[in-house]
Length: 296
Image (tube, rainbow, N blue to C red; front, side, top):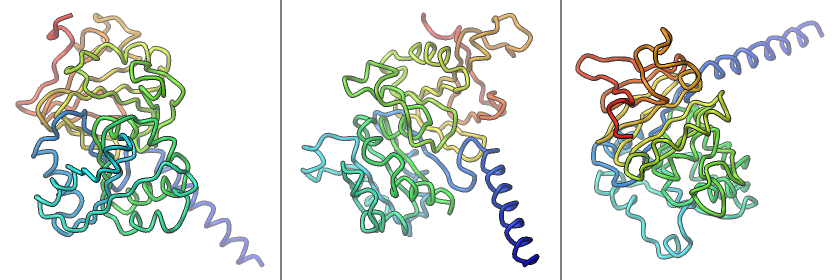
């Protein structure tokens, strides 16, 4: 009896330790996220995704649920064509709008053997309606736990955060709407996309003021971040904007501002960012640019 009690206590302690360790990371502990700001996904980004997925041996699931029914039903899958051109042979298209279906063993079977998932663009609330808190959602996280990669562009980027920006069913101009819960692959983060291309660089400011615990990450088109644990790297053609309530609340001349002026700052290609300290990790030859370098 004592041995049984001891074993249960040990199991509980190990479980609690595992949960604590997981909580130490804002991004996935073992796998990667590749979060793209929409527009044309560059060859550099696709190549990194395939590399993280396992190269030609990858097993990739494409989830087009954010898109319109007409496009999904037509079978047009440019993402599949691109991945095939890069040598990937094992590709599955997985889609439903019914949470009951997303909770079935048959539906999630392809996810259990996958090394990667790609969420296409469209409207992010459709992804939330179909998959949030379902068996499929659990398998998304299981894929990350075994070292896989989850990627996505535009709506497929925003859904990866914990806070679902532009998730209102009435339109994407409503920043905080009737859907505000993302799939939470990256914790305490709100993600925006098409940021510079659509002149959205100021939109996240009010969201972060209202939710100061969140880190705002605004990604421009043809640009992505590769996230693991507490760090991300910027890849692609443009910039990523960072919004932190601490920066919003302190003045530009504050010693804590680290020289960053304005309510947000940018990190560019080759730059790394620490999600814990919320500071850019400066690399030789790569520097963050501050808000004074933008036209306001």
